[in-house]
Amino acid sequence: IHPVYAAMGSTVFERMSALARERGAINLGQGFPEGPAPAPLIEAASRALREKSNQYPPSGGLPELRAALSRFYRERQGLDLSAAEVIVTSGATEAIAAAVLALVHPGDEVILFQPAYDAYAPLVRRAGGVPVSVTLQPPHFRYPMEAVRAAITPRTRVLFLNDPLNPSGTVASPQELAAIARLCIAHDLVAICDEVWEGVRFDGAPHRSLMGVEGMAGRTVKIGSAGKIFGLTGWKVGWLAAHGDLAVALGRVHQFLTFTTAVPLQWAVAEGLGMDAVLRELTTGWAASRARLRSGLEEAGFVVLPNAATWFLCADLSASGVPLADAEFSERALLEAGVATLPVSALYEGEGAPTHIVRLCFTKPDTVLDAAMERLARWR
Ligand code: GLN
Image 1 (cartoon, helix red, strand yellow):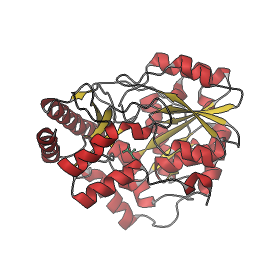
Image 2 (cartoon, helix red, strand yellow):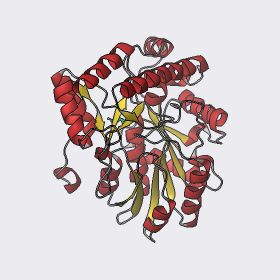
Image 3 (spheres, protein in one colour):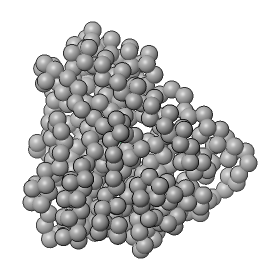
């Protein structure tokens, strides 16, 4: 067994969800919506199952989906990606793996901002790379550019950016993106930009892709997710986008990871990307759930951090007068109150992790959110 996996436990998402199932707890830990899926997408997938081929699509993805994504990004983000420069993957996690395998050589240093999706660092290590962390701190989670500059060495090859950022739901400012782009260009780095939350934004928060910043088109791998855009996490349809040879290389990696992805779901996502009303309705529903969880948490005496994106709210335990570290809070809230949350320190490695923030997923029916808040209020 490779040493990266020998001493590894299950991811915090899997652990919290398994424990929630076992205890019958309300699961606000792992990020996924509950409630009915968007009917037009289900209808499109069912129609594709009945009427279209159920055999292998091309490895890079259903041509109609690649074309739809090229259009989607041109219209919404002003990006100039051809259909051939988009590769459909089995979820964004495969896309992340493909990007790392394509780009990271043994000994390469990779800048990772924490908090980070816990898949990044192990993948970098398995590729022989060395993750170099730069830590973002609550409540604002801004990019400490001095620390980024200090972390770059002649061995740095890749920089990971997750924007909008999970768990905080913050969006990088144009100034932050410009500063990150300047460093990538000056040090000849490739950016792996995990933008799975690009479609889940509130209060008119704008989002610009790092790929669209001047000088970045040829050095950015952009990662997206239908699971997040449509709230269909179990579909595991994601994608990579990059220009020219970089896209070709990513396609080579993908062909020997999963080869391709469930084709009826690709048809449905291709149709869904053109359904503006569905996209608007999803956002409106999630925004209402976000407001409900925020007021429920505040009524229960929790201080909630500002957010502009994602399915998550973060509560500040110390500001709320809760004398527990996040990991202990999450464990006890699950076992004693019956509510699963996510301790944000689990998304950090090494020194400097904040231990006073917990993340709660709000994309749940009102009755579920109300019951969770009642349990937490009674228990705390
Ligand atoms: N991105 C999801 C979350 O933050 C987790 C992804 C997963 O569990 N594979 O909850």
